[in-house]
Length: 291
Ligand code: NAP
Image (cartoon, rainbow, N blue to C red; front, side):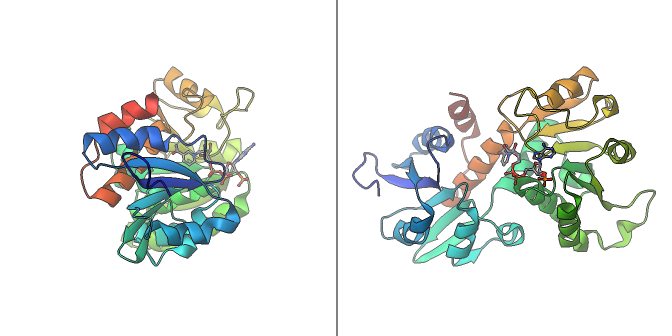
């Protein structure tokens, strides 16, 4: 498992497929800059080999690993303990080897939180947020993070509305306090339909696109473009293409917008910090990601 490399591999990403992963180009400059004396590699792990791969990490001298599709659920099951955010999301994207124990963490949603702060200089707790695609994997995780941060207001939108009804029930406890009363419910779920979106966007500061709509040039608008307003902050989790139709439409009305590259960067930076307990050299990581 990478012992014979120079420097030796001590961190990795598990995935299937994994060749497309940008994590090595982000982490290796950070490992070099902070003098860790090791490198980060990809492991293509087939579903049948997941358990053995996790169990081999410690004996092979690994500090930890990232986990990508489709193994995040398996990682959740394989670790010995988990951080609160990983526990709540039910998926693990970062594993730390601690003696003979594996600790599971999830930096995807905290990465999104940090990306919002870096892009817009505002915290989730101060925002009225709409998450479109809140019933998907990334959208549900973002919803849990926004709820844990006790955002001002959270509107969960999804094509399949049953999925966000479940998410709403999962996060309801975070809104169950005296801030509940107000002109609009602090927690709501809506279908992905123009009328419902129009009603809620009046009371929204931050719009997060967590759907895959916008990856293809032929995709429809995520929200009717006439509903975008200059005061909106728009975060599109998509980063390829870098300027989606949603981002272009937001900028056209004078709204601020950012793509998902910063989320990818910060999930990596937070994983690096979790493994090495040092401040991640974010400029080096960002440059690596763009290389
Ligand atoms: P997922 O679990 O498959 O969820 C997909 C979501 O998109 C669901 O809410 C789905 O709605 C919705 N959707 C898909 N096609 C749609 C369509 N034609 N019309 C309306 N809604 C549609 O995927 P995921 O892993 O959460 O990823 C979602 C997006 O986030 C992807 O673009 C991915 O690249 C991005 N992402 C970015 C980062 C980052 O670091 N920047 C990290 C993770 C994910 P239904 O529930 O109705 O099917």
